[in-house]
Image (cartoon, rainbow, N blue to C red; front, side, top):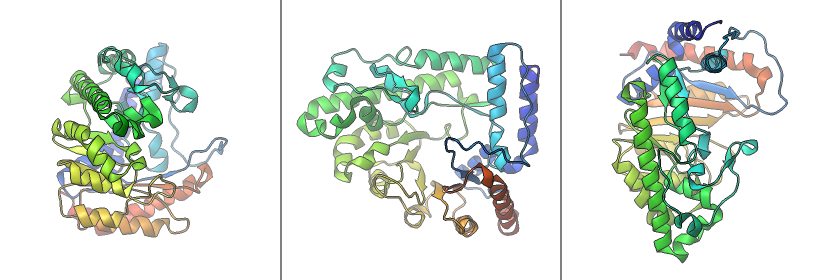
Length: 380
């Protein structure tokens, strides 16, 4: 590929040639409650350091020989969007902004450490933070870099490519990342300071979301983000449901009231699933599935279906797969679709490595055939 335009055309052609892996089509159908032609499920292996096995029989993507370094980097990024096809996994013309879970942390005077997955380099006392002016969403932390990246994507790619908001986490997650373990004691020791601190974070979160969504524009937003916003309450797994109700829920409610729907990521914890369902009025997407190593257990698929299966809520099943019983578990989840079409599927084989990619592709094909035999005919 010698030109960015050539790379864009190639990628768009590849997306068109694989409707069975169209993530946006599956998400939109699930959001609408419509029956869909393809399951569009994701099955992955673990990525571990040192696993450099080079499997055969994989899609070969073209090399990039674009002269301009900025356009060359973008061309490689675009081709990277097609990588999931190597495992027959869903793909979408989608760019992600920011630096993962730590994206908003630098706005509070804390750099990210790239050697630890862009986690905060240190924490700061809440009183010290509150003695400073509130962060400006347009200029604080990583925002100049994010806005520059966004400008480049908008200028160099067509509207077919969507742009996802950065991972903004939630007010409590940000508070935990910024102040560390102090967030577990401060609400009881100095309620007024805690409420002011959370109010500042929540206001910054909302202003940042509003700014970036406006810059991206509705035409370039993802189908899901047009209809709901994502909140991650991972750190609530470390506190009780009563703590959440008193010290966290008021701020999540501010977010919920600002959007038509909420995609709540509760990081598996069943008590977090239950209390957020009780406290937030407009959760439009919930998660469930077996995860072995969690802080507070995992939310079983049966519990979520019992509570939400008859409601217009998108359910994302994400499960670790039991060795030797992968097909049976996923097939059982596919069968849940008969009662609840607002359903998406994602799985990870924790014992699998790169050498197991042929096995994963074979599993995909078997499950695609099962769906085709049982559910494809009802697509609208």
